[in-house]
Image 1 (cartoon, helix red, strand yellow):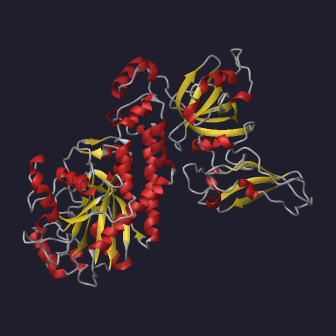
Image 2 (cartoon, one colour):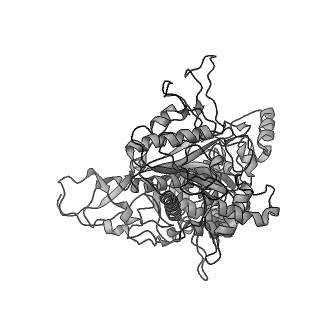
Image 3 (cartoon, helix red, strand yellow):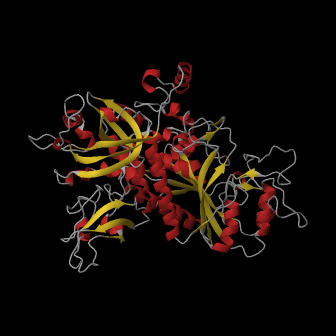
Amino acid sequence: MAGRCERVITKLQRRQVRDTTVHLDVRYDVPGPLTLAGYVPALSPALLPVPGVGPSLAALTHPIASHPGTSTCRQRHEVDSLAKIREPSPHHTDFALQAEMLLRKDLRAWHPETNVPDVQLCGWVRSVRKSSGARFVDITDGSSMRPVQVVVDKALAADIRPGSAVCLQGRWHNAADMKQPSAEGSSVSDISSQHTQSVSGADGMEQGAGRPPTIQELQVDEVKVLGVSDPQVSLSQLILIAIKWHANIASAKTYPIQNKYQTPESLRYISHLRSRTPLNSTLLRLRSDATFILTQFFFNQKFQQTHPPIITSSDCEGAGEAFTVKTGSKAEFFRDPKYLTVSTQLHLEALAQSLGDVWTLSPTFRAEQSDTSRHLSEFYMLEAEMSFVNDMNEVMDLVQSMLKNLAQGLKGLRAANELVQNRLDSRDPAERLAFADLVEQEELDRRWTGLLSPSQWPRITYTEAIERLQPVANQFEHKPIWGSGLQSEHEKYLAKEIGFDKTNNAYLPVFITQYPREIKAFYMLRSASSPPQGETVECFDLLVPSLGELAGGSMREHRLSELEDNMKLHGLEVPGKRQDRSSGLGWYLDLRRWGCPPHGGFGLGFDRLLSYLTGVANVRDVVPFPRHYQRCDC
């Protein structure tokens, strides 16, 4: 058949989405102008421009000059460079059938009479609301903080319960267009309109002057329950479950995640399920976004990502806070004691002497008996090492550039925008209470504005910091004295007093540099010049309000004799030439024997950073499964 054909999209292969390429199964069918029509809501309105998404998908429509002689054929096509079609914006969407796509406010740009058949949505049931002839079911699939409301006939909804995993097939439509009789005599659409008009504003639908709001929803025709919820259990089991999860038997049955406010403390007892709550799932998506942006940043900076070991021979910080690795056997598995890493820095230094600039985002472990909102026993550290660096300012510049780039990147992605927008727009009492657990939005805005500041963040020495603290020493529990470490209360004070930019109403992070040599780690480079109070080392801590220390770094001592002197000063054994240099710190000294250049690096608490960015008060609530002093659940 010669001439033009109409391409009709019959199926979107969601699982074949790779970067900026989408694979579509298409069928050449009948002659006529080439159009995009079909089953996927993100594609079906393609002939209409969608504000904020970039060029209309109508740009993909073009005539086909010729075609094989068969009347029908199937062929796989690729639509490349999707990034050009959907520029980053708060309204961006992936070409996959997800809840976040259906919830975009850009749905108002669709033609009001457009009905999209054969829409399939798979996810988990967040809540079920009953009406005489229908059930209003909130579905979430992890792609959006807000659920999608679907309308299910009462007869089809018998097995749909909160917590169920379901796959629903139906029609995306304007509720006023459908008049389908229900089992109770009234139409499902009538019930739907009465229900959704009362909450229409929550989903971004607008009401014109003198007109009822346009309600768009998924009218379900087929229900598949892929994973049941609330199986039959005995009354005694229900009572035990209710006591354990602080649940109401009649309303929650066996499903602990209720459609009401639950405190962060209670959710920590069910960390295996708390990611199903709207706020926690959004925090985890933001965590994923942050990991991607940081990886991209270091790739662009020509750093090599590496994977240092988790089991080590030494305590990097020398503070005796390492977990010892043990087996059930009395004999040592590794011949001598080994530990879970407290920092990957020493191994990164070894890799930096062959690869140049390196970085990692790895789990680290501290056996600190600190039961505070800032401490975890297992947490993620972002660490980087730079070779052939002579000035610590280069390391601090890298930290500032990295954090600014991260904030810029997150502002263009959905999860971070949802945390802001849903907080402002929320009409759900439970959601408002969940947001109330975070820091005030004004405080959060100051943090982000400071991270995005074009000016250099303040940099003062430890000695200058002590001089700032001493006049207000009566405000602190611990007196600030030169030669002692800065306490958390000191760090928070300095971050607010020095870092607050009144002109821009912003909190700039603050670098404190050149701490006393005696209170810092053995591997740090001695300062070329020190204050009268004593010797200092080339190091820094990065302080932020409310949290205190966010990151720390230093120039590393690259000279063998000076490093050995530092080890003796800190009470560490210096291995002899005949000792096994693969154990203890002998291998670390070896790095200085053969071509060790000046170098420096830093470590940043990734979980603390996420806590700072999101306003979550307790770092235990930004990790999927928190481990801390006396607690390691599931």
